[in-house]
Each structure stands twice: as C-alpha cells, then as structure tokens.
Image (cartoon, rainbow, N blue to C red):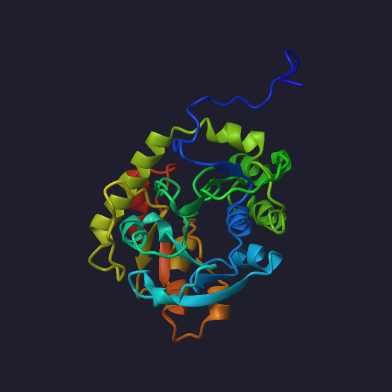
Amino acid sequence: MGDAIGGYFSLELNMMKAYPQSSIYLSLNTARNCLKYILEASNYKLLYIPYFTCDVILEPLKELNIEYRFYSINENLEPVFNFNLIGKNEAFLYTNYFGIKDNYINRLSSFDFNLIIDNAQSFFSKPIKGISSFYSARKFFGVSDGAYLFTNKYLEKDFEQDHSFNRMEHLLKRIDTSAEEAYKEFSENDRCLVAQPIKKMSRLTERILKSVDFEEVKKTRVTNFRFLHDKLKNSNQLIFDLSKNQVPMVYPYWTKDSALKNRLRDHRIFCATYWPNVKDWCSPECLEFRLTEEVVYLPIDQRYNIDTMKKILEHV
C-alpha cells in the first residue's frame, strides 16, 4: 500500500547507510534461521559443531533432522579436529569467537571442505567468497532480532516479513527505568525467538539498523578493546591474534580471579556468560567447561568510552 501521508508520528530515527556488506544475500529474522537456510539449501546430512557454542544452534538441526557431532577446541579457540573426516554431504561449523578469529578463519577457508562460519559474534567480519556465513544484529546493536546471511546457496521460497514492534519493550524500558528492571522483558524476548520460522527481517529492525553509524561503532569498539588489552594482556590467559580490521564483540578476560564476575555485577557492570549449556555437554575437566566458568567477557561496545573502561579496570 505504501506509506501513509500525515497523521501521527512514528519513532524518529536518523537515516544512515544500510548495512555496509554489499555482498550480503539475505536479511532474516534470526541467526539460527540463517543456519537453517544454509542447511536446508545445501541438503547436508551431518554438521560438525563445537562444544563451545550456544545450544540454540541445535534448533535448526533438530527441526531438519540433521545429524550433528561435537568437536573440541584448544586454548587458542581453534578446533582440535581431523578435517579429513568431513564427507561430501557434511559440513563444519566454526564460530568466530568474540569477534577475534578472522586470521584463523582466513587460514581455515583455504581447506577443501564444506565450511560454515558463525559470525554472530563478529558483525563486521567480511564474508569470504564461496563460504556461507551469518551474522546477528542484536548482539551488537539495540534491536530485538535481525540477522544477515551470506551464501551462494538458494532456497526457492517466499518468506513472510517478520514484525518486531511487540519485542521492543526491553529496549525501551531500559532507557526509561534501568537494566535490572528491563531484564525480565529481555529474557522474554529471547524466549520469543525460539522455534520461529524463517522470515525476512522486520521493517522496524531494518529501520533501526539504518540509523546506526557503523564507522563510529567500529572505531569505539576497537579503541575500548585495545585500551583494556593494553592494561590486561599480561594477566590474560587468552592470547589474541587479531586481524588489522577485526572489530571485537567483548574483551574476553581469562582470569584466575573467580570472584571477578560477581564483583563487577555488584558494581552494576554486567558481563554475559558464554554459554551455560556447555557445562551440561562437557565434564569439568574439559577446556570448554573451564572457558565457561573462568572467562569474564568485559563490555567494550559503542555505548561506552575510555572513562568507562577505566571504571571497569578499577574493579578488575
């Protein structure tokens, strides 16, 4: 019908450029549905997935009745795996952990097997020609959903458009009240995304993303990350091999200070846990179990500046 003219106002947002990756093939509702699209279009029979990942990755596999097998990673967050095991109708899923593994992915992409890159934690990593990859918007920006898919696979289906206006309450409430008061709605939004069919990204989510200054976001994240790393690299058990253009999601700090996360929370500095389900999949002796227990993911995103990083460091 086109947009109505006149009447009441809608939410006013700046009109910046669209998502900068011109090679992105589809804008969908969730990252897990991007994976579902890839799997369905490729007709893979088996997918190798890391123990160290979110359990939502199983959702499309179970829905499509695709077999999966776990693999382990080492302390560099890289697979401990014999890639010769991957068959013609099988694929290997690798996660660009915390937006810091571009260099490794570039090496991995030179191997001859079906590779899928989970860039849900690395929004600004460029897709690699011939390799399917997907991105999550809500892990980097103030939206309730939205994902981008890069693939040369194609499904001849006409997907309906998602609507996300009824999933925005936590974003609005946090501004009006507090992070703590809006957490219930945030969790409810997560639950609402379970078992969603593949849909096109909602117009609201798309409109919000078009209001984002992507270059400023990248600059701020990199600046904050480098500031923390300069202060914490000597005590961090994780070693980083960042590419020149890498834009991290968080600063992963592997520390022996078991009380750090709770201490930060007491001062209203909230750090996500990646991922609680890993402790159900692995024994305490496994590296993945230790990563879930011991790594603290310090916020470095575009909402914050160097003064905020200094405040975080005071409590670290």
